[in-house]
Image 1 (cartoon, helix red, strand yellow):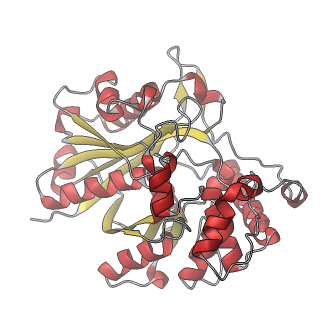
Image 2 (cartoon, one colour):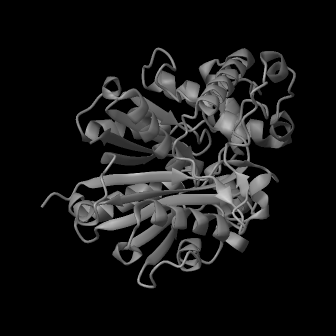
Image 3 (cartoon, helix red, strand yellow):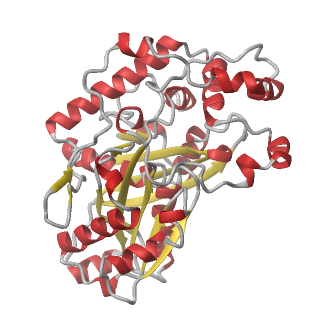
Length: 400
């Protein structure tokens, strides 16, 4: 039996800026609206769905108590449908997809909805606490520093200047603006209220009028906390560094936004039974963990691991969606992979322009990759993100 994992569809909400249009909706409401849209789009008999796996980085408050199952019930799906919330920090949405693919490949389940959500306006990042960030003895043991310090450490080690990271951010905004204006983000499902009135139908965080002068004028975001002792922790780990070059600002770091994404994954046989045509196939997945102080360098190693599993090279990949947590993260990824340019990386911009709804981003990137592969008639795509604790994740897909 062919137990390959096929992607039948990938849809997402628009990204709503912090305290913007989506902040009036609860996370369960947003996710339920997306599940209903997926059901209606495919006239889906939800009793056929074996599980709903949703990544969520901050599973407390309105996002606590297994939001996957809560949204399934609130959306009116069949009572037989189970739900599970997973947390691999910023990799959570893609991890949900990878877990779903593994479940399908095992042959024990046939149809799964995977995805992610985080509504950062209503449930702020870090509000779930946790020893990795807030317990001093654990901090001391792991040599923890905030992610902004890690990003600036990457820039320092890679000799990426303020001009380098600002130029990358400017290109992200420019590409996202072009994609928005030309309607390239086909996976977006407009959100409406109970009266059918439009709430949001585009990525609200994009700043089309951004200039290099605007970016250069911004002050470094992490110099102050670096001076509180975190710079010295990083320098103590990386003794070749004399001082941290604080180059990251609000303009070249990912934006705080709200959003959700869902991906319908299943076996070819189940797709045939339901009359749903697959758009892509998941052919390789990988996770890694590296040094937790520099933290954000897992993209390259995870991508190399995923490529090696299927005997591929980065040259075999047509399109890459790499999460722009910070500009230096992508510059380091490009160097690690031996890429000469950003020609096939984030061709429609990334999280610096559009924002990073942490638990949802990985699933959003997969949908963006498939949309672009179809638009350009390309065959292979790679999706990759870094995550706290030094982790990285990658997924390789091919069109069918």
